[in-house]
Image (tube, rainbow, N blue to C red; front, side):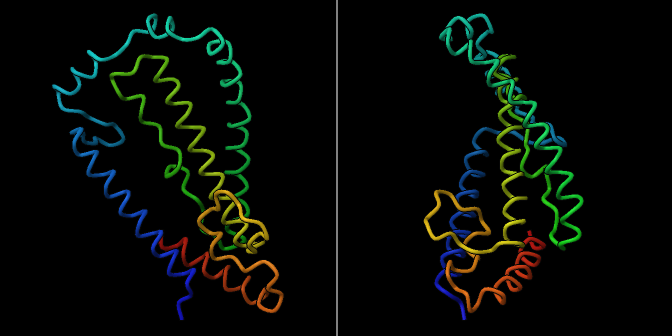
Length: 198
């Protein structure tokens, strides 16, 4: 028997699929293709992009001084991000096979391609590489943490949380002592099966 939560999860997945289909349709308007990992625009579009690029001096002259002064603070975070990447990647490589959890594919989360846009100047491209890496890394880490939580502690919180991960809706209800152990085993099996399908 399908529960209301299962039906709502299916509706959310259908809505996400529809959203991604709409994004793909919008991408078609900008007429680009892929050559391996490289994005290729048609000739006239490439020329238009280069013509729209703002030079670095003009770009920096428009920036507020305090914004420029905070840049080193932002870029200093690269060290903890790289360390996080390293430690989490090693963690899942060592632990996930033991738990029987399929590994999270890093390349599906960390996508660095916006630097290929010709209408961005060098600093904007560097910023896009940095943001693509850091935000992708957070998504990658979140999915590893979500799979870990689904395996070890699949219990909903008593309070509502702002943005639960995809595994959360399948967790046992808070306070359901009678079904908890059975739910943990079912959740582990579902985790393995659900993740294997992706």
